[in-house]
Image 1 (cartoon, rainbow, N blue to C red):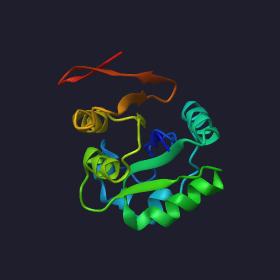
Image 2 (image 1 turned 90 degrees about the vertical axis):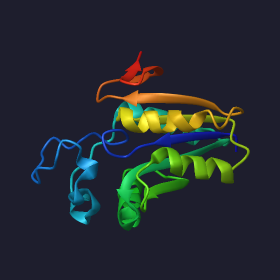
Image 3 (image 1 turned 60 degrees about the vertical axis):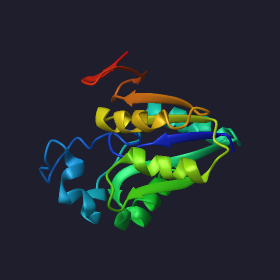
Image 4 (image 1 turned 180 degrees about the horizontal axis):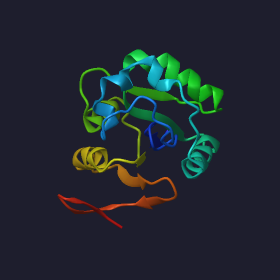
Length: 167
């Protein structure tokens, strides 16, 4: 395997549910609710643009598909079952245990899989894109491509400054 295609779950692989019966905070991943099975009891819809990228990766036998989410490891089975029901199969799931840093979890994995040459990451939140960008310099032999996901488009981002990304 030489490629790693990484997908976030909430608001990336799946669109944010349009009905919030539970009234989460603006940054829902910090809500304790997102650690409960009830948070998975929605009619999640796949983001068609991200789904197309998933399908491309699935056709390439040199690509590992990774789910990198800040959902708690306690939801791993339920969330993976939900994805299987949507015909999405993940090779490596990275759920949160203690460390919220997606960069740290990815860094650990990249040190364990030395043959990776290309990393492509799909994420809706700038803070997680920055987190992965910040570890990318430690892997000079790996090409990183960071993609900001919106409900209606995917944009490859380059670092603009510490306040955000620019197209």
